[in-house]
Length: 185
Length: 172
Image (cartoon, rainbow over all chains, first blue to last red; front, top):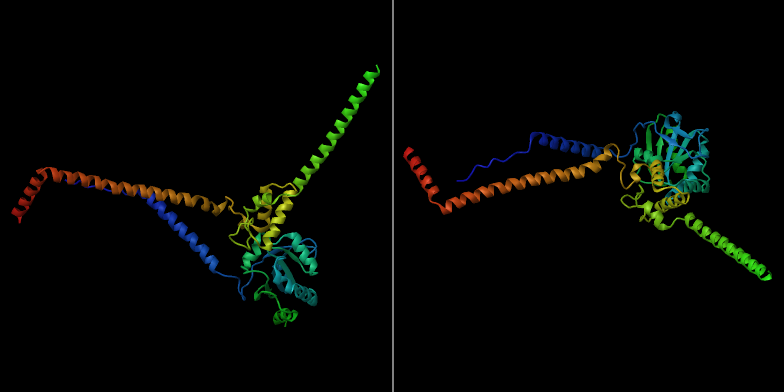
């Protein structure tokens, strides 16, 4: 005669732990995916008050760190660059020329992305750049903007709202001016 | 007396030359040692670099990454090694400058612990479930084989079954 075999089921507390762990894992994966799919900051978005630490010799009015809130009422041009980036060299002179042209009425900031300081300084000297520049420490700024590469330039209006993104190098000084003039008028 | 004087004279000269040669070779060897410490080798640089990843070239360890950015990073490692910094100090410099994401092994803090805990926990759980399932699969087979043995060798079971069947027929 065959015996009736009773299967011992997994204890309830183990089942609960397993399900809780699985649910937690799904939530974690889901939140990570949704963050990634949020994409970059888009024109029209109000920007949070980010900060940029500046290289010595490239400070702004004696300050070694600047915040976006320091420039309320001014257009801010935030340029991501790197010394190892060849296309960045194409626009370096034009950006400096534009900075000098607006003579402080428009704020130019350079964020040096994944770079080493000696090479960055050589680059800044080579192109005689004088506007505030600093390293993108811990890549926080580039992660916040979710840049796709360098060079990339963000135009922020007087109220701290992003209004234009330029991916790749500027072709001329006029191109930079035309984007700025949209909000200066 | 003259002979003794000459012996002393030669002995002192020999001592002098030995001393001079010792100083000379010590100076040379110190110089070589200094030169070796001054410029770290590629192997020493790569030993540190293999634990780092440049954010520009994702999934490529720094020691084998061919880009200009990575070359610059290796130069920084070389400079810092020459300054006498340890591997941990150099890694900390890169973390401070570029963030945790440059490390091949995430630091054991916060949510990063999941990376270390979850895989072994899942493997362990899988092993326990497999073991339990194997146990469940093997038990019924044993009982089945016992019952089939009973059925084949004895007619006793057939007798009882026949009786039950007869009873069932009567009740119908």
